[in-house]
Length: 306
Image 1 (tube, one colour):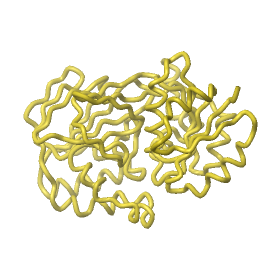
Image 2: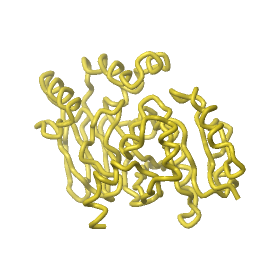
Image 3: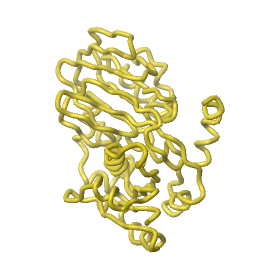
Image 4: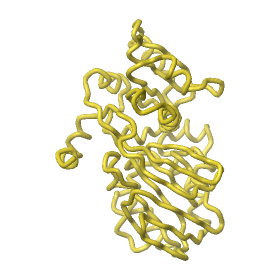
């Protein structure tokens, strides 16, 4: 029985490293699957009967494999390891994994694994899971501005480059929200972030207080304001301190129910979903994942108390 299944994304930002990774993992105990539209990841994982699924790609690859794993019964669900070869690799950063692909691969056999939270999104005819951050409102427009050429030319900075045009013409959304039992009504907003990981858009700390092992969502609501408010929020976001801005509402809660006029779409780490979500709910400790040593240090207090 194979111990591990390596699933790679041939369209990832650093996909040129895939051959090198495959050579390192080429043993009878490893199977390989390329992530394509015609590949059913749930079936591939079940048929491999493996102990660990290695996700070689970026945040989109992570989300695709997380969704596949969440379709497998808890008792049969493999562990998950990340090898960051995407453009931004934000969730890998949250788990404190090395940016070097070889070093991350080494963790599969040497690192500790922890039960990591994932988030369930539900709409009227829609259910999806994600590991990192969902960003709604004007954040979706930033994602739609980006092209493959921009990602190739700018790397992680493409998210900032794509936002320049949007910042000059922000759209307002009036929302009502049930934020873990706290009701918020008639808020004019620019964006809503629902975070499990800490960074998005190329390692910008949009949810600096988030922890994927605390059983809570970090909900960040950015209220409508003036051009000066935009400058303050963007500047402080780059410094990791924008939660203190007057235009920002920040809560840590187990769930969020949301209604918006006009309807608010969301992007999951750059991938736009067309359905309008109505509920976000954390699934505590849903998938065991390998983490870096710095993650264990940063979360040592929580781990001692759990």
